[in-house]
Image (tube, rainbow, N blue to C red; front, side, top):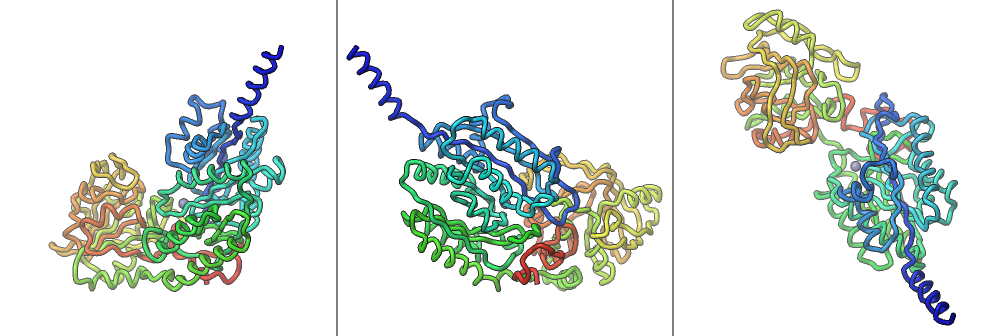
Length: 513
Ligand SMILES: [Zn+2]
């Protein structure tokens, strides 16, 4: 009997020693563009729910480099019993319909509830979700989480760098961490950090104190590179600050300019261990660093008219003009005419312009090779990309529009399709310096120069190349272009915040006015 009791005692104490914290993992993400009228619906979402997947979510999610993979790696490191719940993600688009949002949050919370006793939750939320009726979707998610799980359960949230953080979200999350880097190369690291902080909280070693400061500004995505000035020293300041053993997490994120929400723009969030004054002081210090670089964040890029004028006068060619307002990869129309209009008006020579216009393709095919072309092209999809521009010229060649790219380019695709494509030699062409309009049937992001070469156009011999994109075409155009110029063109993907009508953003933000 005594032996049996002893055995029981040993078993109990052994299990007590190995009692693991039960930590649940989930995510619900969206980067919502308030200015995009196309709503995000359930059909846009990929929802992965533990128990309904063919593969163990810890294996599947753990293989990526995401924040969730970091939750898993960090959770294993801390010896947690990990409980995967649900992860939902969709491509950036307009705000979520209320229905979509309610459905997914209900499923997420029900799944967490079904996991039994939980000691804590690691939650990946993008931070720039907009929902019909809830401008700060992630704040609403946290409100519903608190309603379901109470105020005491530790919930650590990881946000994207492009989050528009409301102070209320910081309050509702036990700790809120954002990615520090653009391009986002530290996502997994942030998840690991979240798991480490969770262990500190659960083992009673940490009492969270925190502060958030929002500099009154928004700034353009063109400046969102934390490996360059002016944001390199700011990202470094947060990394330095985390070397202080009293600092749990220091985040300085950039905001998302296409979110017209009250708390749009950057934020600094600092979480400390039982030192409110330190959190307050450091959050303010780093927010001041952001505010103080604002003069370097003024968008100083030329209008279409200025860009064409300086390109014509450039000492070295070709000049590649990036039509940022009509960024096909960002979902715009691909038939913007603002720059084309200037090329014609200013009588530029030696230019190449690609435009998606199936009706113009048909007309050119009808005219035949060598035939006369006289038609207004582009500006036909919506009212954001300029008016059709009359082009007079001659049909030079026709192509099936299929081409191949073997080098690594943005997105990594090999086979490309323009649909039926026609080369028009436009008015003002000379034998040595033609003006080339490439009419395509499909919209196709200019990620490869073979788009031109496959249609008999020699980009390196031209003076002005126009590419409908912002970042994606760079890898293709950099090798041939003497200079790459971002053009402040209007359109669905305009990079200039002043081109949009903000209704909900706090009034007077630097960058909007
Ligand atoms: Zn992002």
